[in-house]
Image 1 (cartoon, rainbow, N blue to C red):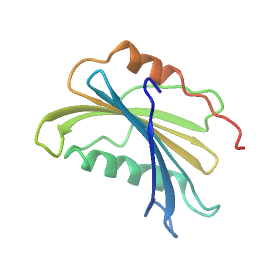
Image 2: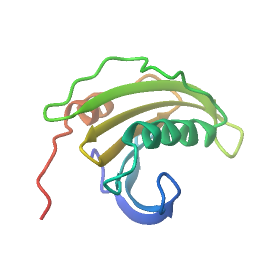
Image 3: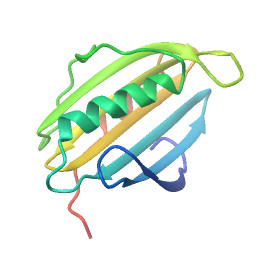
Image 4: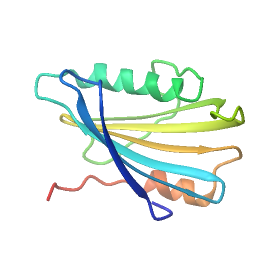
Length: 137
């Protein structure tokens, strides 16, 4: 993360039963950076959860995203990875550009996100290039 993240968590209905969403987010240089993740139950569909998560993220900024990724992305040890972009509105009505990356490793799903109102910064490029899977403690 390009800045010291704040931590939060909450239950979300991306599977049945609801799963705990862990979030780390921070603001710097006009951008919001966030990394979030969930662990799905063994019988849950990762593809359905990812599609629902993409739709919910886009709806949060009053935007839509296509079903297929808008940018190619490869992350070592991922079962799936893709990036999506959209332009929408913050709660204040201000325009916001968003880029989301979604990764899957088994039943672990990760969303990386950058929100801003101007072209990506070097910090954003490092953010996208810096993700690595780590073994749980």
